[in-house]
Length: 268
Ligand SMILES: O=P(O)(O)OC[C@H]1O[C@H](O[C@H]2O[C@H](CO)[C@@H](O)[C@H](O)[C@H]2O)[C@H](O)[C@@H](O)[C@@H]1O
Image 1 (cartoon, rainbow, N blue to C red):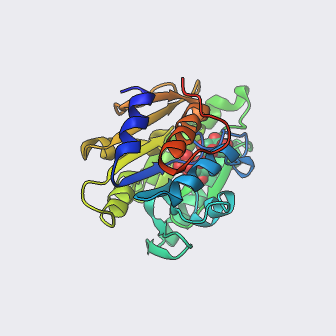
Image 2: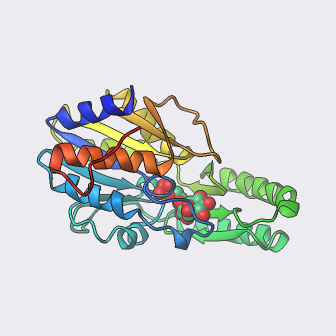
């Protein structure tokens, strides 16, 4: 499938679930997590799509709902899935699903992570409600071997406690085994008309269950490639080069389903 075929297919679907990852997909990767900003053109297209008939828009992220809601506050009528599916908020913000937080296990895992940070101070712990991430983007080259060793020990400790460890873009992240983005898509689709076409895009390991799920049910899985992670472990229908190409697709689709926005969209 090429991007023009995807525009045609998505534009013609009587019911469409357009689901997009955040970091590396509608926001460029930044050196610290707090610096990520959704591209204004992406927000404009998603807002247009969210108001179009028969169209449901969802932001599906590893971030918490609170975090992603603040970064996408311009969007009025979208679903938000946080922490890889452990939290789901309807348009308007009402939480329709909220997993119980594995607080004690995460506390223990945080103490293990602190051991890693004592060894390699450039590691950064991101504690969330249901998951915990160790970021290594700012670890200098000379400290990478020690960081990999410490991350490996931490990942083993997380696995022993029953967490799933995802090795993503300069991040090791532990989440509980009951949630992933594929199951989150299934949750959303159960609320939409039968036959809804799902189009999902994401750039990292955490997106693979959603890309695979979309494809398994006859939808479209799009991989957003980067020099940091050129390939994915699951086969997508379409690979696009970085957030810019995905955002161009969103703008083209918004023009078709919801009226023209801004300049005429150009697709590669
Ligand atoms: O599911 P996503 O929306 O892709 O979120 C995945 C993780 O994104 C964040 O980390 C990533 O983005 C940072 C900012 O660009 C970058 O510095 C880091 O290296 C990336 O791994 C976020 O901090 C995590 O909580 C998300 O799980």
